[in-house]
Length: 423
Image (cartoon, rainbow, N blue to C red; front, side, top):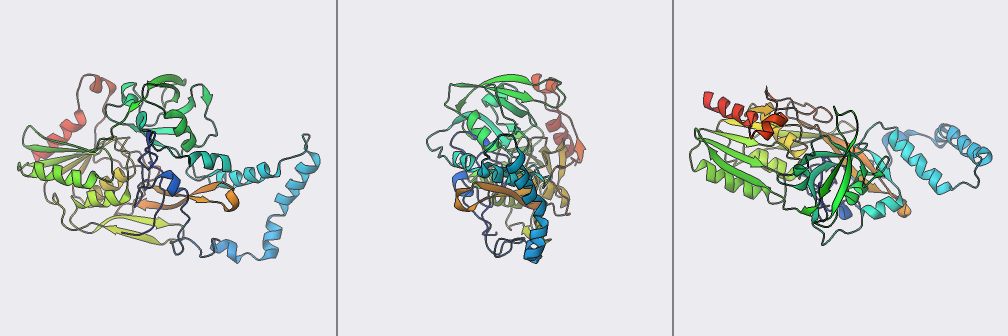
């Protein structure tokens, strides 16, 4: 396992839990997934390590190093000309040069046409670094802070977010009536969180719904679930992983042992609405089902890549397997599901996953000038398929309607059982 430490927001998946005090990627969409999940206060202080693939030793890109001073002077001539024009002609004088500089940085980040790369000014950066120690309340949802608006990846089971009907893909466009347009998702998170028993009104923009609508959520103390398991009829084992946290691997292994001791004919691994977590945990979890070989690649801008392979000693590398995914399966969930699919270890059943397969890093700027978040890598499945913005297509597509949920039906689980019984 690499020693590089990143703040991965995705994620997606990023993804991240809306609880105060869980700002440790813990708004889990981890390295989205991180090799280690870091508190934001630590993660934001990490700079790109020397020798990291895609990084130059002096912090400059190869193309920038190739430019001569004369080339750069010519390149930036329109910028400085524009600078002089606004200082000479703009109607409201004097201008704040620091704000102009920050605007230029935002424009540069926007020009990358990457929703996950952005800029925080010094005030925003300091707000995002305020300690949340001692607070453990929120609405209970994994979110992606890297889209245009803070986006729900999936509500946590039995959480306030689930109770009010928040869904994967819901965008929070206002909080308590305050417009969140242009507000960094990490700051929106703080507006949504708050003490248990208090309420927050979220204005939601949902695909397929013509107009935004308000949802009032009463915050609560959130217990983050990890693993659930049981035997189903027909001697089928069922294992549901809710997140890829620090304790997920040992809890998963214990649940697997308990199930395998009952000699199941097959195993259903449920990753639905799992917003992700730590990359290290994702590799460990995948290794329980894949005996050896490639689990994923991490590819950098210069074409180099890191290869992550399965750890030996997995407990369920031979038993017939079906994996359940849906639009709330993100980040680390997609790493595991993609590896199982590409390695022909089992079939995927459900709906297309979230599509969070890129790696972000916050890099503080010198002299307390804020920080920039840059996408530094993408994840690829063993067959070198990209996950980012696409997601994983199940081998067997089975929709889950609101009517199914209200009636207590689970056609996706039923199909998984059917497939295993037919084997």
